[in-house]
Length: 401
Image (cartoon, rainbow, N blue to C red):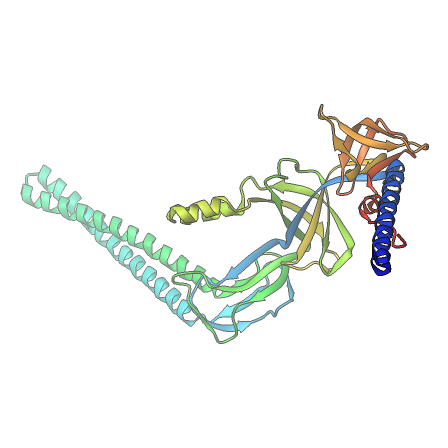
């Protein structure tokens, strides 16, 4: 064997020995790490826990009405502007009343005409009654024919019928005059309640037509108290009920919570209004609609004394279901469900040993759960095995080897 070949074989043997030594060292390192695992733990401590249902709502005025015109015509004057506060009975706008005035004059003239006709017919009635009485007397004396008596009787009956017809015409004319008078009053549009003008739909000089639909002049709302309509999912609506405390914030001021009390939960979702149209839709659209989420509106009121709350604002709502003050708690991630369905946790002792312990739980929020029994304050519960342990079992031999 040449010296060069011998040196090559010796070098290869050295590499084999070094490799074996490195693997043996890695196994020992992994074994040592496995003997002393590390855990991510949390200490059992006391805190306030609130169980709640979250929802998104929209602010609306407690009362809001659309004030419209009940007669047609040109807007002669508009006496309010957007944002004005008005009182009940205040004149908001006036419609040109010339047509209504003429209608009232015509109705009153018709009433006077029919009344005059009735007065004239009453005179005729008196004359017919006297003629009939005279014919009755002559008939008893055989001084008149029966035909004359019957003619007088017919004339009396016809006159009485004419008066009855005129009475009906007078009643009809009276109704027409009253209606014309009311329509004349409608030309002055008044506020039906105290409130704030939140929308103005017309301008001075604009013509409105009330023959088909009632045109809106303004929208009036009471803003001292606002109503929040919170959309509660069908999974959560069975948990809530009127009287529960509510907290909400608005997007523009998330650090200022408002408190209220849930007043009502609507018995049907808003989609019930679409039932008439959905009944005529195709089966494919019906199946698509049935698979969509269902929400029920929960209503509650809140005072708006400072005027910060406005119509159509978005509210982030929290409905409090239950609350536990100063309760023992652990993170939700530490709790597992045992084979018997009971809750369990892994407790880390001071000597490093781990024990499984059954606990009785109470209410929970999005991070922690109440512990009624099974743990003491200060106990350490395991959340999970630390990531460094997992990394140690997977790393390769030390770089020096």
